[in-house]
Image 1 (cartoon, helix red, strand yellow):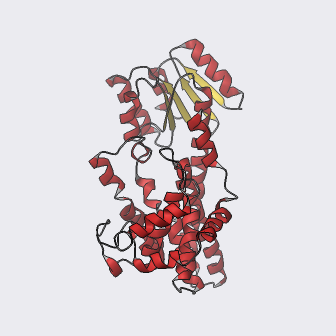
Image 2: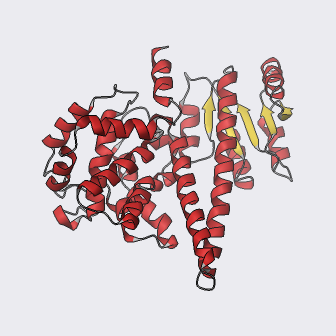
Image 3: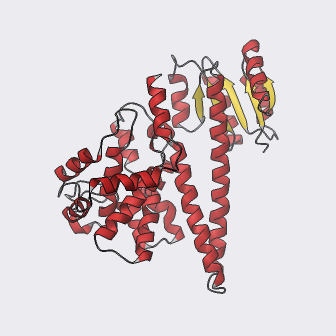
Length: 365
């Protein structure tokens, strides 16, 4: 597959030529056809296209069938659907079924280019992760024979975690950097609770980084939905702790890591999910993480609200003591001055791209 080769489909010749000329400026190799039938003839045979850009004002049953055939024959082909936003229903079902990867307006050239870049980065990350995971399994088989390889294994293991976390964060720019921040908060809380063993602290960090790995299996149409989730969609979201645990259990991660992934949405009063555990039935590392996760959520910018300060976060956490949060963990949090928590956040996020400012600017414009 040639990651620079694209097939553009648009019946409006002038608009198609304009898009082709624009993309050629970025060294993409472009083939163009006026309709999906001709596109399918090319894609249902031997080809090395990386992406299909399809402009479609109306998607009837015939075109939808061709698109399904194309996707079935080329499961790794990235598909960008170009349609007017006043008719978003055209692509919603395709997004939900995973038949298209992005939707943009036909004349939004910068949006189309951004979608292409996103697909390239996603492909590179997935390829790297496949490589790392494959190498990890090989090294696990050899570690009993050669002690030196255990060191290499740990390095690849850490790299795999970092890449999985980065892939997750790239799916949702609104929460970019969240995993690193909650990982640091969790380690500090653990130390305040008297945990000093460095291996256990590092395992808590890894579990925090990977806590939302199960969201890889949740469709973007649900994960990035701008409005309220339906009851059925919410039930799918609530599957992500179990899905995440299922994804990583074959790597045989230590208990602290698996416990955070599986139990990070449990509540101290037993009204959480997926197991409805109560009190100390919930592993300590998961109770620690639950507070760290809430602290970052309250103090971070979101498109639907401004960020709130650490004083507000403290009040919210105290209000939910013994219901959502373990009282012992709440006391540990309150034992450290708020300005020190702010410093921890600053030190953790200062090297990250300033996505929050970009999101605010986009919202105001």
